[in-house]
Amino acid sequence: MSLKKILNFLKSKVFIVAMLILIQLLFFLWIISMLSEYFLFIYFILVALSFIMSIYVLNKNDNPSYKIAWVIMIMTLPVFGGLIYLLFGGQKVPKELRKRDHKSQMDVQSVLWQNQQLMEELKKDDPISFKQANYIWESADYPLYQHTDTTFFPLGEDQFSAMIEELKKAKKFIFMEYFIIAEGIMWNTILDILLEKVEEGVDVRLMYDDAGCIATLPTDYDKRLCRLGIKTKVFNPIRPRLAMQMNNRDHRKILIIDGIVGMTGGINLADEYINEYERFGHWKDCAVMIKGEAVWSFTLMFLQFWNYDEPIKEDFFLYKVEAEKVAIFADDGLVQPFSDSPTDDENVGENTHINMINGALDYVYAATPYLVLDNEMKTALILAAKNGVDVRILVPHIPDKPYVFALTQHNYRDLIQSGVRIYEYTPGFVHAKTFVVDDKVAVVGTVNMDYRSYYLHYECGIWFYKSKVVMDVKEDYLKTLEKSQEITMEDCLEVSWFVRVVRAFLNLFAPMM
Image (cartoon, rainbow, N blue to C red; front, side, top):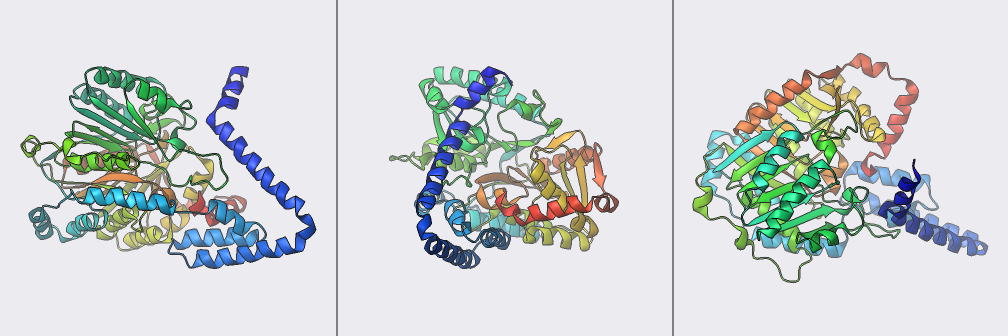
């Protein structure tokens, strides 16, 4: 490593935050050492705290696997376990932030409505799909739409070309919300267009996640963009303190142009997503573009986050497109964008996946970068396979996080034994998050099949019914399987006992990863 890289690292936010946290930790340990003469008293206090925290965790209304992982951690370290949970164990956002988030969501709910005739027609046409659409409406407050054109992008390069084309057409506003942004060909090309649009008087706004960008963007990059005329916000800034709320991240990827065009999927704004920079072999990702009526839900998702800390809230209707302008789009099946939040008790992303699995009669094809399953999801997949449904899951062959890949592989044996077919994408890394079922329904979005997406992150996606996207996702999936290797039971049995033990041990703490 060159001296310049070392100096840049020492000046980076990652290093500074880590050092400040370490200083706080050392100070905390020094305080304890100073009180060593009261060792027995402090020892019993800390053990009592761990016992109380164990009872508290077991009685929380959380995922059972998450609770068990923390109880094991606490009881394994009875002296400091309770204290560690107090500092780092919070699964949900702080109470004050939950209240503010709930208030902004209520504002959005007040302007959303469901075309009941559309729902009734779906109920007559397909009762199983109606239940899914009704769940998203009743539990996540996002309605079902028609008058929406849809386009599927099987690779990041395909979406990038469309993004450039659509951004250049912007006349009124551009809203962008991304987990990761990294300087390079992709982002710099987009940034040049955004600056041109600012000069033209277009309202350009950007939100990005601080944890997602902590190693990819300079400190105070948001202020730099603001000076250039791009209104910019950083989601959940990372603070250098021990009791950090770092779990809840904005994992959504949203682009909205003039309220007419919307995009989402797995693709962030960094060069590896368009295969201009190789990190883990070939990067396989997917995205979708919608034009028309359904984009309104994405506009509201973005403005809900934007309004979150604004003293004067935006008038949503200033960004709503006139009905006659979206009515021109021909119906391409039914389209239902949705968002999932960790601030409520509704796991919309996971429940949508489970509903699709439970409703399948013929097949379920899923792609995910991480297969870290809770008991509910694992049971649904196994039961569907035992019922005779063709269940297939596509995961990476070259992982980005080896420890998470170990957990992914830990799940292979039970799933394959029950009839689920697992494929690894041989050329590289799968970052796509897609589900397609029975040639009728599909989901494309940001939701991984892991604890973080299902329980901790803000996520989004689109549920499609009898749209051309459904068959496009299926066709792309089957083509991708041709480049992938199927994992067999023999492959699972050949794994050494030591590796199995390591994977089993990691699985105990899967909800924390």
